[in-house]
Image 1 (cartoon, rainbow, N blue to C red):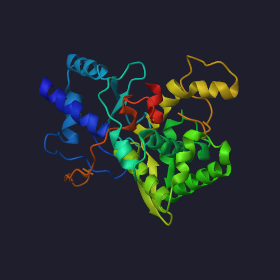
Image 2 (spheres, rainbow, N blue to C red):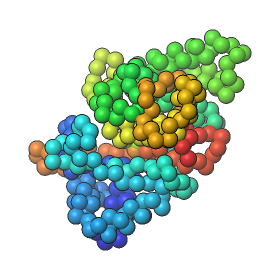
Image 3 (cartoon, helix red, strand yellow):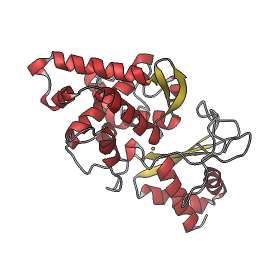
Image 4 (cartoon, rainbow, N blue to C red):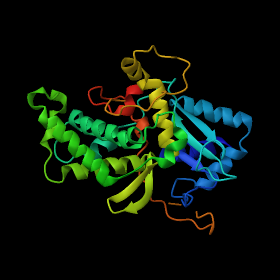
Length: 307
């Protein structure tokens, strides 16, 4: 792997966050596009890299606060036999430079002239409610990464939870937190539109993927990348909340949060294996939510609490 190829591999991983030798679940390999390698070529370059080249790649990513992790079929469900999954994850022990932007989040959730702080409140509520569906409802801990295929929800369920949350907030009257009162200004189909925009952001960031259709609308499933990042956020950035609730001191050696997190608390189509035919690229330009930098302290999205 020469320097040009390394740059192409990094560009691919920054865009898609994962690369698989043999995608599972019926997903087609991502085809090459202008200025972008095909998924099969990225995997081949990493597979065939010398130890010195892998070390150079690790050092290059570390300079951006990132690390590349490799997962084999026996590591987690959903990785096809004979395949290998490469995932680009933020390194919680490294500081990320102000290289990434949260503008796609604000642009997607903005319906009128809301401030960034107000839009961050919408993101926070939707993020917490999504994790209620993915974790609390299943009595699932953030450490239960291997259960990611069980974690599904319908769009209508997220909208319903959001509506309940808004009504609960409205019922508080003057006792409602001032920072959350902007949520009460919703009108018409605002909740549905914001939930749809949030889900689209998570799909583009590689956190969710379409599972199947249902009477309640589209059904979404957490990805392995999404489960890995949720665990990382819990271990490194939410454990103090568990400590507050349990009254137990934080165990620095713990590998995961021991119980399912109460999500009322806080915290980016391809070659068919059978046919070998490449399908056109249909992904978007947004990086994962974990990669948004802290350029505005007044409007942090949940994943940014770790930086």
